[in-house]
Amino acid sequence: MKDLDALWDDHGGVSKYHVIYFLAAALVIFASGQVSQVAIFFSAVPQFRSVQSELIIEQFAFKVGYITSLYFCRCIVPSLDKSQSNLTEEEIRSCAIPYDDKTQKYDSCRMYEVNASDCLGNRTASNVVNCDAGYKYSTEYYTETTISEWNLVCDRRILDVIATSLFFVGFMLGSFLSGPIADWFGRKKGMLIFTGSFLLVGVGLAFCPYFELFVILRMIQGGASVGTFIVCFIYINEIAPAKYRTTFSTFTTFLNSIGHSLLPGFAYAIRDWRHLQMLCSTLPLIPLLIICFVPESPRWLLSADRLEEAKTAVSRCLNSNSAALTDLEWDVVVKSEQKKRSATGGEKRPSIFTLFQQPGMRFVSVVVIYTWFTVNLVFYGLTYNVGNLAGDPYVNSALNGIVEPIATVLLFSLPWLGKRWLLALVFLISGVSCILSTIFNEVANDDQGLITVGTAMAILGKFGASASFKVIFMLTSDLYPTVVRTTGIALGSMSARIGGIFTPFTLELQNEIPWLTQSVFGAFAVIACFASLLFPDLRNVPCLSTIEEAEKYYQEHISVPCFRKSRNDEKNHYDSHVYDNQAFDASTKL
Image 1 (cartoon, rainbow, N blue to C red):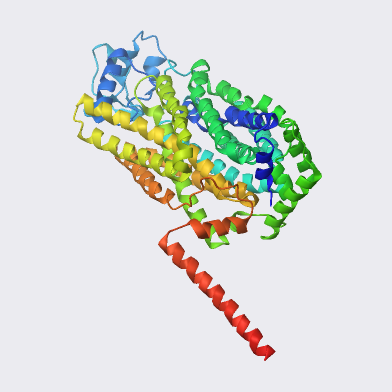
Image 2: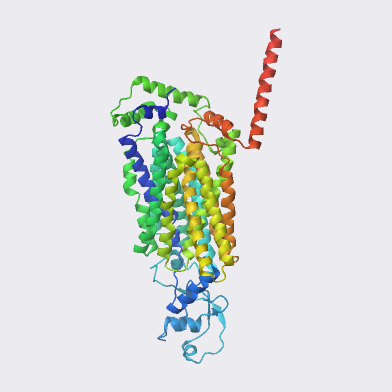
């Protein structure tokens, strides 16, 4: 029976309206993507360094070979900073700030009890005390950040870690809600709800006067951001003809990467976090207005039995290809889709629990949970850690962002490798690179060549993590049938945000054990490489529509021994049950 994919193929494939609808949704993703990484600049700790101390710090950074912040800020010394002492910054720091010869850095959180005369050659032994008059921040790179505005340093540093973690809690909640909202109310309304919330909350966040309110609003915007991405991505996959689905998905992820790469440029031009927040939050305004004029996903309309609306949307695309939709063709498509849904009770609204009711889908969902958890932990771990690199933060962030669109190039190998093998490959690249980076930095011992190789391995790890993030969305979209596709991606995305919740705490490990953070990233990524190979191969497979259709495909293409044994046990149990019923019927007839 001819389904929607076959209908597109019979009438020229992709049309002008396919491209217009795709670009509308892709622009929303492009415009809203910066928020997920803007914390690199929000949470930046303004550094203060003289030329001399800069050299010392950079030499130390290369020596230890790890990403680490060595001098954040310094205490305000009231007797010096608020007096007419006429001392230079270098003199104040040398006189009033403790210096550790072992680590070769100044203390950011304590100071000596001194006065101006102590710094003019008459200094006597002084007590070391905590900062009690605030902190002095450099404005060389940032006019204002959340760190400098609310003094989230020293004993209050954990508050910023918690704020970042709660941002990913918002991501998790948005992932959880995006599936049901898009499946119940439709893809278009889902895009409008999440993008509109993203815009309104983001503007409010730019005027937020309190840190506690900042944390809450940022968490909400995080949920709206990931909800926007998920629903738009699903919409794009559902409107795309089967032959062009990979191309549409690849270009979508490329646009998302370009958005991330532009963020350092925005931040360089706008040094105040509030102004940067306002820009990033209002970028989706025009794409949001465009979305108001695109039709609902025909696949979702068919699954919701809104047949006339679905027919209108499909006819518009066919007409732009100089083709006409006949009533006979449409009736065949409708009956085909209804037959698929009736096999699994298409009237029932899906939920997360629906993904665990059948053995095949349950197996796939467990692997989805782990791989999404890992890709988010590694990707955002390497992304957020860039703020701790020695040197210009904008250059570092730009280099870190450039690898994202470059990683998209790997997606052009999908016709040959397939999504499953490509995902395993990029996970392997990311994991091995993180581990090698750690090893090279451990054995470097001031060898500049090994240190450079270690740095290159870390960048290569971000390259692999970026590619993993792109492929996992596309693969998961293919794994689940239409009736639970958004819910399935929402499950993966929600699992990813759990990884994000742990990311800032994982980064804190390097303050105590420098090699541990990268090792954790590497180990998780290598395991995810092998887990990816457990997915069924979906190359050249038509878009799955129903749970029954997907379950049958899983049963035939998942080759894991333990799963195959479980599958055979269930089949034998079913065959035995059928045989007993037949024997009983025969005996009653006798």
